[in-house]
Image 1 (cartoon, rainbow, N blue to C red):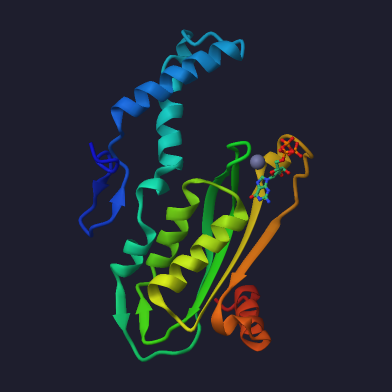
Image 2 (image 1 turned 90 degrees about the vertical axis):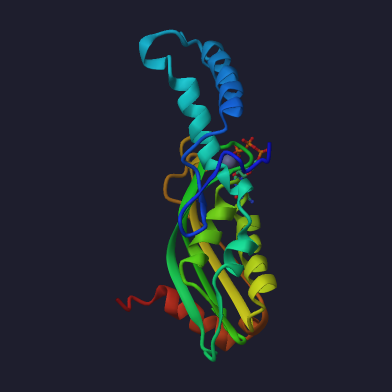
Length: 209
Ligand SMILES: Nc1nc2c(ncn2[C@@H]2O[C@H](COP(=O)(O)OP(=O)(O)OP(=O)(O)O)[C@@H](O)[C@H]2O)c(=O)[nH]1
Ligand SMILES: [Zn+2]
């Protein structure tokens, strides 16, 4: 079986989960039943009977980015266009899971590129953010992967990515800091220039709408 067989293609050719890989769900659920017992719970009590399966499905959803090909998503909507100003997509919601604790980190991504002959369908930017975020991640790698995918696929004059997230592993356990936010950034090409980077940073902090 192909590893993407459990993913449905929607009409516009994009993949989303609405069927699950039953064998994987059953196996992961079995482990979770065991884990519930080890946590001192009774996995047979009414409220928990279906929990292992729910958790398995949730985890499959939260990691379905492994089954997506972000470069192909971008290639699906690249258009020749004579536009060479910065394109900024800001405030893209991010939900990911840290690879150390498998706890959520979440916040916003701001992505920009400067076209070099081609533009990309706007929705593809949040789609690739999701494709990389729906995996076990560290915020730094997530940031770099988004930058590299856009740079290598679209070959623009520059790419900028800023991500700001709260990490639940730092809030609900461990150091227990409820308000700390981690910001990461990655730039290529024209964004190495102070002036260009400053314009991007101004645009993502400006309240224009
Ligand atoms: N750089 C980076 N670190 C992360 C990210 N998500 C979680 N971490 C950190 O990963 C580290 C793992 O450190 P360890 O000392 O092995 O784990 P730990 O004992 O649970 O650490 P504490 O969270 O300090 O209790 C922690 O400092 C987390 O804050 C991330 O996206 N990027
Ligand atoms: Zn963590």
